Length: 188
Image (cartoon, rainbow, N blue to C red; front, top):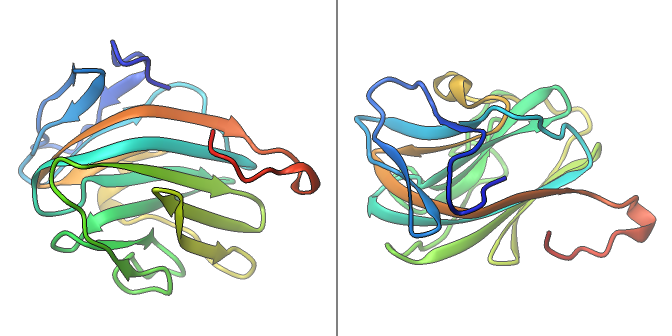
């Protein structure tokens, strides 16, 4: 979804007060804004049975450097990486509860300038998320309401946002998943 040279179908997200978006050194740099900054994909998107992956880096700031909004069927969801002061990871939102207040909440250390491989897998049964191949979210979908926070509505259907933080993202790609019996579990 990104060739390392031009934004292509990515557009700066119209959050208002967002930082500059530019391509530099084979990555998209999302500059620090007053609050939210980001990019939104304007092309076709998968809705179910897919894996989405990217590499992300917190270049400056102390909050989330990857708020990845993605489709789960017809509903959007966001994986927050590095939120609430720097270390929170989780899905926003499950049954109306954001990443800081649901069963997907966990805390990790993220070093400024380090690259992290982020991967989201969406099937009709669950959302699975990985950072550097370590599973950080395993959320069953049956009987759960999936949504996003109102603030990131402009990221729908597929977007990457930051909060008062400069980030760099690269190697953005997606692939359809094989049927469960043939799935290998490898990276895209």
